[in-house]
Structures are given as structure tokens and as C-alpha cells.
Length: 163
Image 1 (spheres, rainbow, N blue to C red):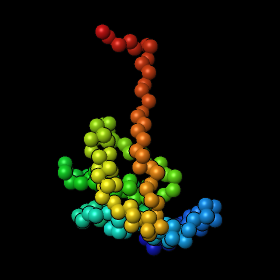
Image 2 (cartoon, rainbow, N blue to C red):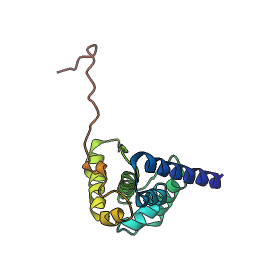
Image 3 (cartoon, rainbow, N blue to C red):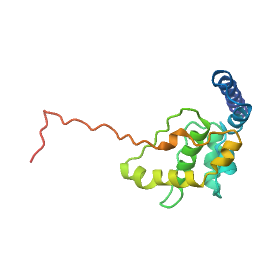
């Protein structure tokens, strides 16, 4: 079953690459970059980001590479969960054209004070010149990091607030 998942993913990556070459006139270097890194966040991080990953981060990135559709990471404060999430966001933005990456948390403060600063930090430590040389984007457009907060709920008229 694992082999079948890998074969499907490789076929999909090759199909998407061929499609982009035809539709967008993608260069052969960009096509090779997409084939190599489209389904492999671990290889992308190893090649372009200056970081020594602990074993549990490698395990999570391997699970993503192997096609796991849901991956949960539990751990205490300071484990590096935000670093891992930031690396996945950067990888996704660097290999997926026109993607939208949604980051959520139970509290706005977790995004604002933990995840987004990590994304900025690891973006600065990513070798974007090397990414460009390998055929990737010069700077992913998604890294403008536009901020959209959830719409506020309207108060129900049947339940007035007490003063």
C-alpha cells in the first residue's frame, strides 16, 4: 500500500509538472525543481534551510512526504512545533504556485507571537538564491503575509448585553 501511495504521488508530481510546462511555459529547471521538491518537504528543508532538525521533526516531515493526510504534533513548550510549522509553510509556498496557506490556532496570540515570527525568522535563514538557482521561485509571493482576521459575530438582538 505504501508503494502505491508513492507511485501515485510521483505520477501526480510529474503530471502537474508537465501541465505547468505546457500552460505556463515553465522552464526545464523549474520543472526539475517541482518534481524533486513538490512532495518532499524534508529534502527541501535539507537543501535550502540552515537548520539541524531533531529526529521527531524529521519523522513528521517524512510522514508528510509519505502522503499522510493528517499529522498531529503534541509536545511541551519549547519543543519546536512552531519551527516545524514555519518550515512546512515555507516549503509549501516555495513549491506550490499560487497557493493559499491557512494558519490557524485556538488563540490569535499564538499566531501573532509564535508562528508568524518563526515564519519570518526561517524565511530569513532560507537560502533563496540557492532556491532560485535550483529552479524555484526567487521569493514566494505568499511571503507578503497578508493578515486576514475572522469576521466578528454580530450580537443577537434577542440576547441583549447587560450593562
